[in-house]
Figure 1 (cartoon, one colour):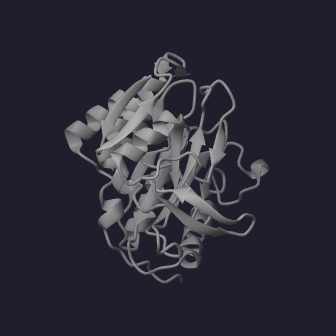
Figure 2 (cartoon, rainbow, N blue to C red):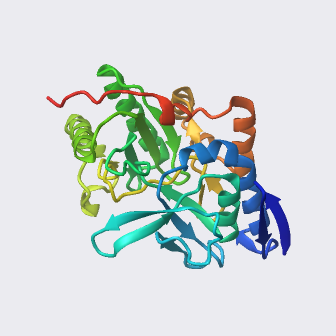
Length: 297
């Protein structure tokens, strides 16, 4: 147990020697989140946040948590979001390093924000394509489709950014930061997914049905919904080893595909901290770049 002061708040950190991954302790999880916070917080601030917590480590069952913990400190902000089933959900807002460290101390390994910011919860700030390979397809297959998504978007004048999911997939984001609603972004993403599937039905699907996804990359357009979340850039992922959902350059994706080397697309916490120290935050345009969504058809 240790008491630390962060952002003028005192936090009591507990069970620091407990393994949350195999050979990676809770103390190391907290250290990673404390050190990555400068680039992580801008992607979380004002966004309702779903937590995926593993208090007994990744080898035990974890759970998703939308409602902010009732025992939170009074300096942890929340935002009330209407929910059809629950009435209202009071989501955590992670707007500082102190909040991120407090969440890490709760063993919130994964952080999943909404695509919108409070109070404009009906306005997504980006579009996301979640490229999810169905076995035996893998991250390199998802990489190939990510490059096709980029090319399609470039063809209609839209810039995009990529990150690895931290698992087997790749996420492509289209920064918008403009006045657009979820109906428009979801329809747009679905239309792009259907075009890609129509062009290469052997390797790509836009259909959610599991039976349709074997050996193909599912271009998941459905994430573009006011109730859906996608794991945050720089978030840890649950798994046998600590991996990070990390930004990747398009050249890195191309090089990994050319080399047929999936290991180039797997990043540990130390890898990501070193990359950020060297390059800063390649995902910063996600929060600032303004683009207008072209009309369909």
